[in-house]
Image (tube, rainbow, N blue to C red; front, side, top):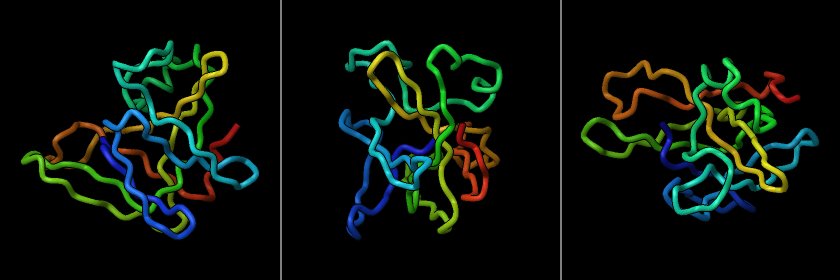
Length: 142
């Protein structure tokens, strides 16, 4: 499900884990800049936006997220972390032209990004979902 990510800020690797209430993800804007956006919502955070840090692709496709003015975005990271069924962390590298797909949602002046997930193909994963990896050439922005 992607519990942590790594990306670079001015050439320095930064690791961010979802449980941290200050967690932000680098979202690529239409102009090509990176904007740091809060990663989902935890139960201790007051908000009208959904709890959690992930959005199932099928729930996006069936309209569940429509009330939050969803915008598909690209999350620029170098790798993400997933735990196996023994709760051991494993890091998975992305290629230069790859991104995690994100869903940018908003309520009034608040914005948050959720990692889009699909069914996992691995029986070894602790979760039944896996982050959706997209190519830079995929035009998924509105």
